[in-house]
Length: 342
Ligand code: ADP
Ligand code: MG
Image (cartoon, rainbow, N blue to C red; front, top):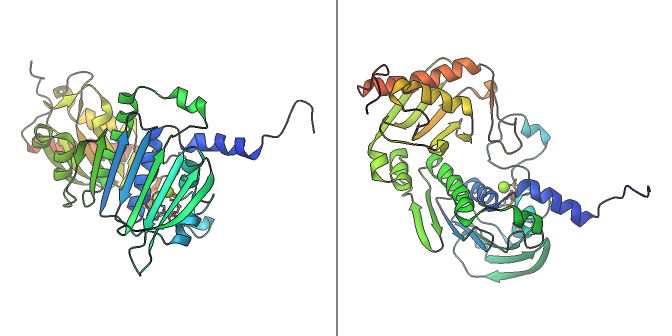
């Protein structure tokens, strides 16, 4: 072995790897909410305290886990969602498939996984993990479903902790993550609370407009214009706000491709350009747009966090999105060449 180059011990390697998956409290929330959706939950309640490092809780009424499943779930590279690597090539139906989220979160926090299977007569189990070690596994009484509690996040990775921003910024990230999933899953009742106060709660009634009302409030919801478009390259549906209802931040434009949230500047650009001169400079509408393209014409695995996509026929897809929004605005008598008011 070289004098200068030494092998990192396993614990250090794990913590470095953990930092890639769990960048900030919002990453924990994202992984846990994805697991709840994958578990076919019909309600998901997210509660966060402060900047999220003290306390994050995600509770669902999903499929749940047996005692053996709970033990297996927190091990590295364990997943119930993929058989072998071949499954990776054609659109995996589930959201996360790396089998490392619970393990990784458990490595950088004090984590409790309490679960009871929905089917059968399986009892409840509560597993406690601290810094990657299982501390206890005990039976517990609880309704079917799963509750994951994460406390003292990054207690053993002080560098991560230092890099976090203010409570408001970190909670802002959490809010955006939960909003994104709430809008994409109107048939799931999703609630978010911060420091004990309810931020929003969707009804789970299966209607996107209803979810937007819950998340963004009445004024925004009432300004929403429905978009429905069938093009050769893409089908587009969802809602955009009228040109008067805008914000200076881009974050209220949510775009999804084949039901997966994506952050794509060009997609957002296509929406914005449909408004033409009606939108003042540096203003963005509210939007929740779902773009549907044939799965074989889009690569969703471009980015490890899977928030980016690559289309085979980029231009045609962006044109379809622009036309979709333009048509919707025109239908509402909002002609794009009209000069902005005021
Ligand atoms: P992945 O989601 O990639 O499979 P995770 O570490 O996030 O990996 O979860 C590991 C396994 O634990 C999942 O495959 C699933 O079987 C189980 N699991 C995790 N969260 C839940 C949940 N909320 N409800 C039911 N099962 C869960
Ligand atoms: Mg997962």
